Image (cartoon, rainbow, N blue to C red; front, side, top):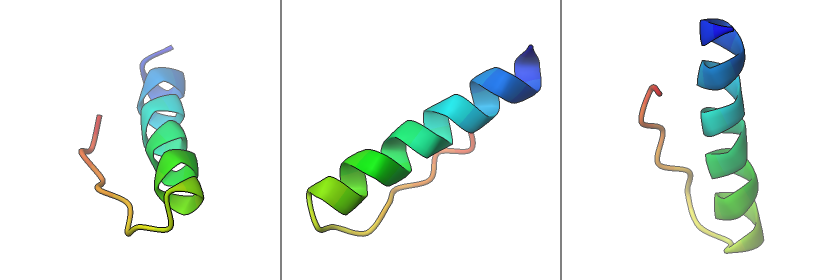
Length: 29
């Protein structure tokens, strides 16, 4: 469960940064 949450947050940040054409800001959460 913790791993899934960790992956989903970074994954969402990666998608948002890609759509915004900016570099992802990994928070490690």
